[in-house]
Amino acid sequence: MHSDVRTDIGVPKASEPPPGEVPGGNPSERRWVRRLARYCWRHKQAVTISVGGTLLATAGSLVIPLLQRSAIDNVIVAHHASVWPLAIGLLIAAAANFAGGTARGKTRSTPASWSAARSPT
Image 1 (cartoon, helix red, strand yellow):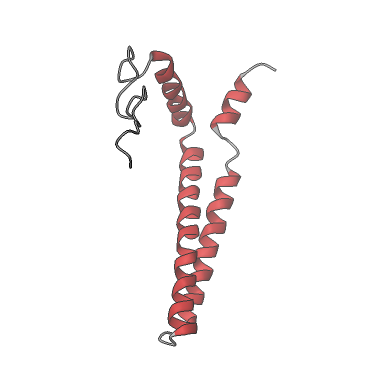
Image 2 (tube, helix red, strand yellow):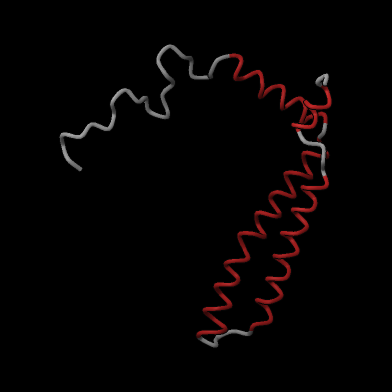
């Protein structure tokens, strides 16, 4: 990097609030978080299922490529392992991915629908 190039021209650091602003943000920015937390508290089961489904689907999506890489490296290329444990692992990961996505999709009660249901049309 050249010494004559400035990269800090008028840009506040991410950890510093802009000049004249308190670190916690302004009150209107904090209000929506409190309102969302109240809605989530009223619908604990829907939020729990949605978050659990999201975590399950994410875990399934993360594991599938790792199992595929292991199958290619250890079974197809090097012939060190059996294909069946990896194939069963792939089926379990795919089922977890599907179940998580389905659980997340079945909870139609989302924060967006809560506010839409309460607002007059």
